[in-house]
Image 1: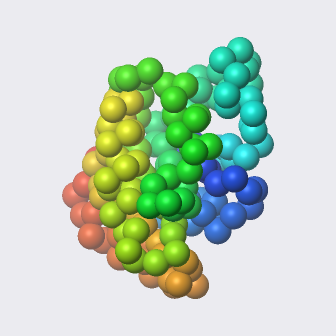
Image 2 (image 1 turned 135 degrees about the horizontal axis):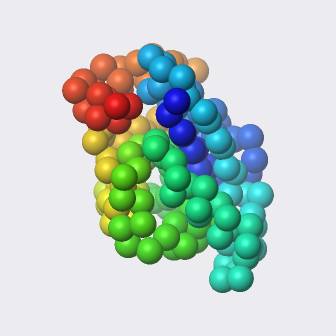
Length: 166
């Protein structure tokens, strides 16, 4: 059973970004059983900025034990959110070695489609994660057709998808 952890870097709970990330994780693991854990960083608020937070330290440990990590954020000012950056700052370099990751971002339009590749992928790689597929970006104008967008992303990922779900 694949251990999947989904991190939602949205400032509000129950966002479209969460829906997209959960559907992506389920689609990626479609051929096999998986145990899914979803963390909404909005639940942690100011604890993300407290070096003594036992709750955040426990979350870091939990994330490091995932086999597949889906890291999702809406696009804010052309990049991922500050709340996501604050959480990922808890991880030392190479602390995610052995974890396969997928960067996911949602946004207002296609002008930000490269944001997950340019900003989020390098951060995950710096932390040691393996990112074998291209990132997934969904403009909110295509939210209603997200199932087709996900299917196309999976098909385009080809052999890299095998590395992602091994």
